[in-house]
Length: 97
Image (cartoon, rainbow, N blue to C red):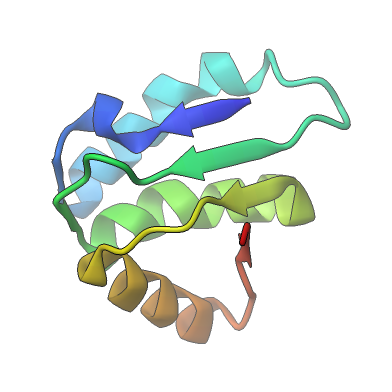
């Protein structure tokens, strides 16, 4: 399954909004089959803050582990945010090349 984060907006900031987006996505998460991967597409996202991503991506990483795949992005805020989260969580995201 592919999730386009832009469905939550182009400026993804604040813990509150990230948590709200995660809760809104939970019914869709239940539709994933046991072995299905979830691909996160950052296309169209202008800003991704560490706080929003920590509330949305970190729980997904904890739930899915290596079944969570991040699609490549040339967005510098995405790169910086992912680096911060990986260092803070001491867990690597799987990024599709």
